[in-house]
Image (cartoon, rainbow, N blue to C red; front, side, top):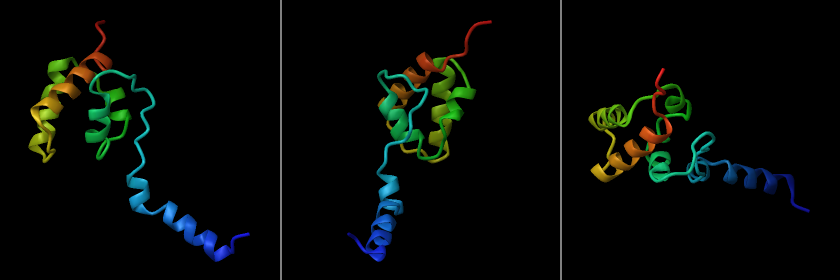
Length: 97
C-alpha cells in the first residue's frame, strides 16, 4: 500500500501543467471531417468550443476570421487555414432562413 505522501506526489505529477497540456481538447459537437484535427490543435489553444457553435458563417467568412487571427499572432500556414476554413464552412455554416 502506498503512503499518503507518495499518493500526493503522484497526484501532483498527474495534475501538473505539463501533463494537462498534453491532453487532447474535448471535441464535443465537432463531427469528424477533414480539418477537424488542425482546428482542434491550432484554435483550442486560445478558444473554447462555444466560439464556433455560437458564431456561424460561410466558408469565406471563416477564412476571413482565421486570417484576422493570423494578424493577431497566430502562426498558421496557408494549408492549415484552408483546412480549418473548409471544415468550419461545412460544419458551422450559417443556415439559410
